[in-house]
Length: 112
Length: 111
Image 1 (cartoon, chains in turn yellow, green):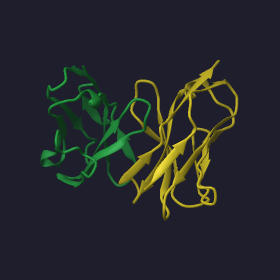
Image 2: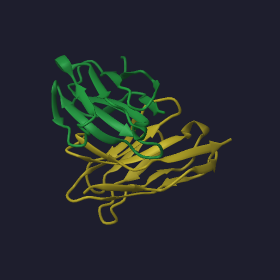
Image 3: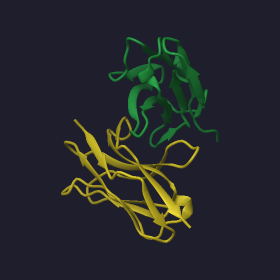
C-alpha cells in the first residue's frame, strides 16, 4: 500500500539558515504529493503541492519538487524565519484529495 | 469566511464512557472527512462523506465508532464505549472541488 517516510525531528535551526526536510514515498502509479503545515494552536493547512513528476510546488518561500526517479518530495527553504516554526507533514494523495496518506510529521523550531 | 469548526476542543472522559465530536464544514463543501491523529503520528482517514453518503468508511472501527452527516452539512463522530487507546486528536476536514481545509481538532483523553 501507499506510505510516506518523513525525516524525523525535531529540527532546530537559527533564523536565516537553510532548511531541508526529507520526504520519500512508496506508491504505485502517479499520486499527487503535498506538504501540510500546522502552526501552534491551529489546524493543518496546505503549504504546497505537486500533481505530476518534475512539478515544483512553491509557497511562502518554500519549494518542493516531485522526483519520480527517487520517489522524493523534499521541502526546502533558503532562509527560515521564526514564524516558520511549526510541524510539517508530507502527504500522498490519490484521486486528488480523496485519500491522503500522511507522514509522521517533522517539528521545526527556528531560534532568533 | 468561517473555517471548519469543531467542538469540543478538549474532552477528558473515563474509559467505557461515550463521547461525541461535532464538525461544521465550510459552507458549500460537499466532502467531509474525519481523521484520527495519534501522538507523534500523521493523520489517518477514518471516514469520508460525499454529501450525506459515507463513501469510504473502511478504516472506521465500526464496533465502537459511528458517524453521521445528516442533511449533508454538519457531522458527528461518536465513540461508545471509549477505550484508553482512543486518546488522540480527531480532525475534521472539508473540501469543495480542491484543497482540504482542516479544523483545529478535538483532543480526547481517556483515563
